[in-house]
Length: 436
View 1 (tube, helix red, strand yellow):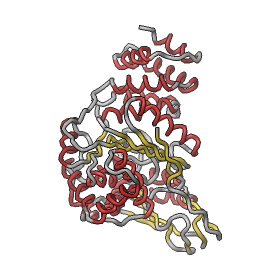
View 2 (tube, helix red, strand yellow):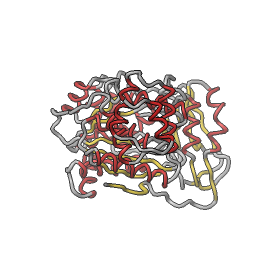
View 3 (cartoon, helix red, strand yellow):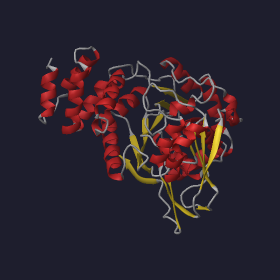
View 4 (cartoon, helix red, strand yellow):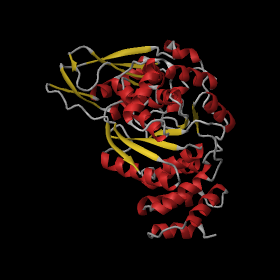
């Protein structure tokens, strides 16, 4: 074996690793033959010097094969996964997975928890009493076979190298490396046994990628690497300047996703669900055109079959399926305070990043992985960009377990709203589509 110091020096000096070197590096790290401080040094060298496509693919494969790969052979329907790079108010997976399942496409999803200003799908699902996100591979496969949709967390069996490496990246300033992001995402996605992958790569202040150029770079790298690994993939770059929909916070966002499945809900949440769902149906070969795919999805909303799949998924995970018809069963905050408009005008912007941090301050998010969240905390938006508001009317409601939490963030929340006498340009929801 090449020593870890030699590999660090090689990458530090701009050298290229062979696939065998990267495979051995990952194996040795998991076996304890490479120390955390040595792997941290290598990660920093990789951030500064970069990894080419061959290296990125090899690292992805090494991380993938560090654990169990699910084959899902008993699931006969085409299996299409979806992944979002994370944003504020992004609850789309909760309504998307059961909706595409109702259209004949299985949706196996391994999701994550919120960290920093962005929310996590698992936290939203756990706002439903009894919902279990920690399932073994056999139960995951059975739910997919019987229901068509299952959303779980990453187990210790799936890509354990990613769990270890992400924990290091999070505390060593190496999160932003696009090749490392690609390997982290795809090592988990390839492990689910999917036939295809649809990516929602967010761009804007509320996203991990602050501008379209960086989001495009990430999307292209993800699509190229996934296809090199044999996984057909499509990426959409979507706008993340303002929160998605009208809620930020776990139970609040779960309620909004249920509203979409009732064929209601905010226009942007509904549209993003349909756009991503159409890509999933096309990738599965269920339809060949976007128009035909949308008709199938809209029918599943109108006839309630998407909602029915959601209830079945929740029940299969041990959760209270009654929330599908009675979302008032979800946790509700003890304190709910209106945030009033300070002047009349047209809302020109709603800062997703600021509201993301406000939500964390209210108790809906976490700064450390081990922190607990308050499922009921968050923000209910009364208006969207372009709406006319009158001084003194509510812009939003801040929800928390006690008034002091609201008092601490109220001024920051107010700064997230900007108004003018002139209406803003209507933003595009989907900025670009990238396919291999």
